Length: 572
Image (cartoon, rainbow, N blue to C red; front, side, top):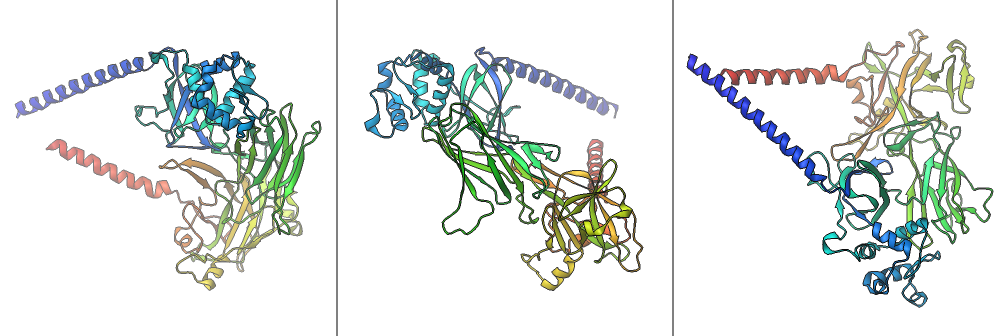
């Protein structure tokens, strides 16, 4: 028996030594590999972060090409007659000037007056602009020819392919966070997607540099930014939670570079349906800018028409101010990805460009009135919606917004909106009856309408934890409570397993719910449309912590089974 035990002990020691040696060897190999990767001192590791208007973009492939030599040749005018004979040069000539009768010899003449050809020199700024023109017109093959003209075969431009980090170098695409890495040459680099479309021109100056690429806004000559203030809450992925209604205007800034269209041109501004543009203000010191509303033929009236912005020839960068608001909307119609502006434009070389603004999102909360003693839906209670400040209370009114009161005991109900069952309250707009969920397979119009009378829906609130409902009318045989029912609203976003961005908000996340009754509500949808319980007794029932009540016990049982299994194997 002792011999068997000693044998087991020796076996364990040998296994331990083998594992230890394997670990040391793995570390050594990893270190050697790390040294080998960055042996080329002309290249440095960089990280690419790709988004689509703020949302991480996964499973996309990108490459980088260093164009320092081509850039310098354009600056110096070092273009030889032989360079202009290639098919790539001829193709670029036709792209820059579609009319063959207007092509001047061996020059590439751009519409805005810039040109490249033998002996034509450029400033550093014009050379960079010209490089971007060429890349947007599909001229990368020509730039690579200029780049490699005086190089040997061993020194020709080699593309740098972005790949995932952390032992996933064979995955030549962005990860779920939209990130990828590569060793890139120092200097001016063109970022291209795998399809060969130009994305961005960037100067790489140091190792571990982060390159941000927003595929919805690849042209740095145009940009729309949101003028954020204390009324907004910034969420993940550059989205902002705001309050709806005309009383909560938001301001965007449209910046246009003078290099976008030196000849003047036309831009088209549009928006998602529930983002209403009220005005577009132009700089007072620039003459010739006009803004006109675009109405479709036969259209009688459109409260949110597109705008056509006409620009003169620009000699400096300009900024336009766009004022808008998010119109009150229903929980069903609020776009989960948010509301935003779109700009469509064509530069002075005929290349179309489209950009987007940061998105603004709405959130809110849902309630269901329940008699906790009978565990049944009830109706008839009435409340006011409020939010607490440092020294007072603000009570919501559909007509005037938020009305300030020093005490809850002296609320003038004639000045505020009284909430009751069966209604959806869109902040900044009129309330409306909750719609029937006609898409349910067992739809019953009479039952649906009856259940709706126990529901209160609120949408259009800004994020915050200082909100409350205050009872102003109780059911018969119930005393009126003088306590506030506090709640918070929020909106955030996360990345799903497949890399898509998933919205999470207080409309679809109930912290205080009755599971048995929620499933009977016609428009209830887990994670999308959930309801918080309102007790007729003036207080909310104990909050059910799903983690403690369900997930944790299951996890402990699984862990116990695992440990018992290990113990039984050890005995054998």
